[in-house]
Length: 246
Image (cartoon, rainbow, N blue to C red; front, side):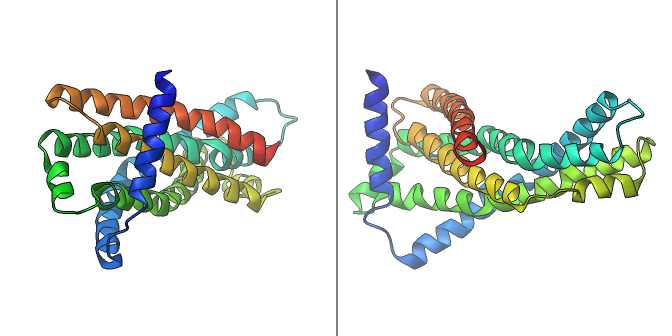
């Protein structure tokens, strides 16, 4: 029955986070800071993961298409579809669940055990709104941009590794990337990214906000935040795919 207890407490925390809103100027200022801390600072790892993911999927596709009857442009088509449908949105979100999720949980957990959150409440500040809402808004805003960058760099990574290794010509790869392009796939990926951003930030915030104990419990909450948010991302990935693509 603990699942219902945690779901109810999570629901109440989200209600508290988006009620009794602070002044717009305060919320805006905090959101900009969180965009920089949670989004811009994650750009480096997104670039590395995306480039190498695109390179690997291109190499694997080329190995599986050694039949001379198969046109080489299919490699570019497969790399594009893989990055747009799954690798960019889901993989980047899972990576951010580890980086951003642990950061959010440990930050709020430390503030809880050092009684900083209690101090905010005593001053009459809605701590959930002040601390959690900007993080959720920031990730839901910036993560789609990170995913778009990841899509582009993944395709570029495939092009670089393929052309330099002689697997295909640049014209063949570009033709495959352009062939039968469906703009809805980009929209689908961005919808998933926004949902995943809410999940990874809100679940991590829940784990950190309700920490009780000391440094050991803060560490445990960070681990739980990464594990639970990753599992929920995979679950909702399946649900959204079923709803939007099938």
